[in-house]
Image (cartoon, one colour):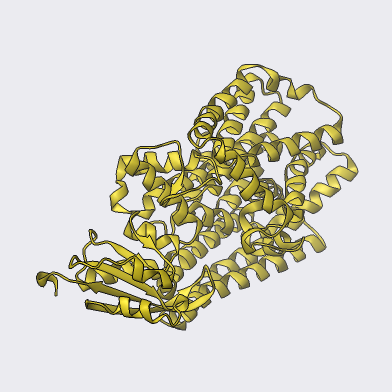
Length: 547
């Protein structure tokens, strides 16, 4: 392995692994509900209006997350596309860059903690993990948040091992950027890490460079101007609503039906942390042994545990739970796994076999996801079975090589297993699950029926993906509201009826049947609401040329 990690090769390789895993499905999957489409639509409206301060979804203010990810998305879209094109892949590029930054920062900080070889192994495993790749392919905040948070903790690792003001400036740069991406999360993770280390070690001298005044000033300069501007532009509503209506409810209850008991994230770990799951238990066992025996590796273990455990506990205790919440703790666990991987020859006893069993369990769950998507929501079980078997074959190879204690081949096959899952699940199986791609199918149906993108649209299918797909002027409405909204003239227009939300309102039904010149029914599944449904796309008052 030494040959592969010399000089620039190690960080370049882990960045490439993160990129290729994240890119599976980026160019082919249609817009996802609900968060991705909300973020992308708000960014598109910034480009359409030129207002880069206020965040809005159609006419509604979106006072939930800061503006950072929207600016990054807007910059990419402005350079390589435009808001009118509605190319969702362009909005996903900042997330791909975020996972590359996360992988790089894991290696950059990890080499000061666990050594260059173990840091490379841990960063490579982390780059191929299921959760990181998924977030890297979605146009929202969490991939870039993970990148900036990992960079902040990596800077702390350098400060602990002799880093000076340069490391401190990187830390404050990451803190400022993290605040602009997702508010308090990056400062929270970094703060919990520092507090845990101070309590555990009773040493604070290594933190002195953080007090150098240009550092905090840099963080303030990054985050404060927009915060001041948006407070002025919204008469103080942004912070009031972000704290009171978004963050506050998450602290006291399962916000927006995303609740869960403590242990939720731990139960998901075998699958979402795959393939690094294969070496996690031995890494933890080696860490505990180093602490008990007070070996030279004990400070490294303290640092990694101070990074992972407090953050993990916060999100396990938080009533609102989503799988990606604990992603900023994954790099610390990956470095423990990387340390175990490069020590395969020394691993003995139950941790090794328990880890193999957990990884096998995770692989089976992940294979089931691959098989289920085409079978339930797509063309049938055949494609899913083939893809699942291919993934399992690579995963079994990784498990066998780990059991045989072959370091390099085990690492290569682990990365290959992660990549295979992303391609099979996100690049192929999810794409084939056409029943869940309702908004994209509606857009295609309008074109095939002869409709024009310039025709106004009224829809009772109210998912954000439809707005992003068809444009900002798409009108979302309750079924009973339609008679009062539809035009009375002879100009062409489009209606989309979500049958699962339609009642027996005769006036609304009559309005939908008025002057219909073409229609199509699209049976499918709304995964956001959990409802089987049929979308009925109707074209009204078609011009002669398109009939």
